[in-house]
Image (cartoon, rainbow, N blue to C red):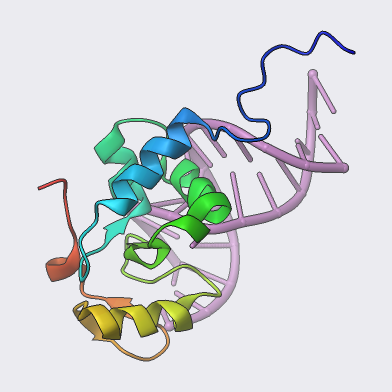
Length: 112
DNA sequence: AGCGTGACGAGTA
DNA sequence: ATACTCGCCACGC
């Protein structure tokens, strides 16, 4: 066998960074949202692109619809599913039709 | 090791 | 609203 060093990514463990990102998403209350950049800034680590990658890979385990672009638009390809959740959670919207836009002015949430 | 790509953000036309 | 550019960071080929 190759002397493969301990591979924390293989099998079970997800990156520590991904774990922190998912933790933040999990604590976003219903009816609120955070942008990719907001989460990156909140963690003070990586960047908006890193957060997007984590959600793209592990988003299936968290409320991914509460994480949207800085301009209030949900993830591409999932705007329809996201809209269903926004209606169910009472998320303040500025546009209920494409392009679906969340009212960041009211819905934007911080670790508060 | 270089290059393309992406669930990003902000700026400009 | 759309298209394009630049900066950013990590991954896959």
